[in-house]
Image 1 (cartoon, rainbow, N blue to C red):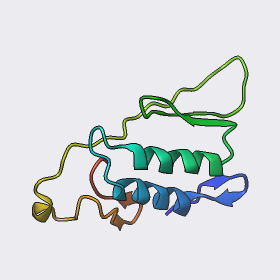
Image 2 (cartoon, rainbow, N blue to C red):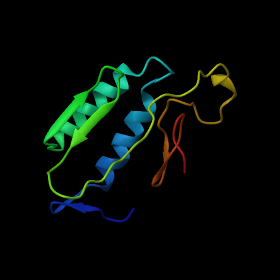
Image 3 (cartoon, one colour):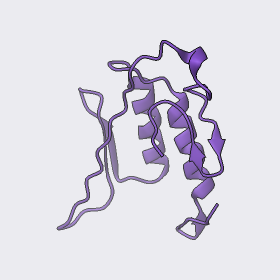
Length: 108
């Protein structure tokens, strides 16, 4: 795995672990609260200036201020898994192969 330096620290392994943890949290439609709280906690840990979960369950974060903004938008929900025994890799395992993690709600 290549190094990803953030503030002089190698963050690649931390990012992979975070992605695996996201996949391991079941977040079916209308049941994303646990995942939202997990993401918000990580944002606070990373030092975001502002983090909140709005009344719709969206996680909002702000870093810095200024004339330009960058918006990152993503969804947290997945559809129900009714055939877990049919999956080659369990959908909520977060199992990884080198730098690619597998499971429900993730893409390569």
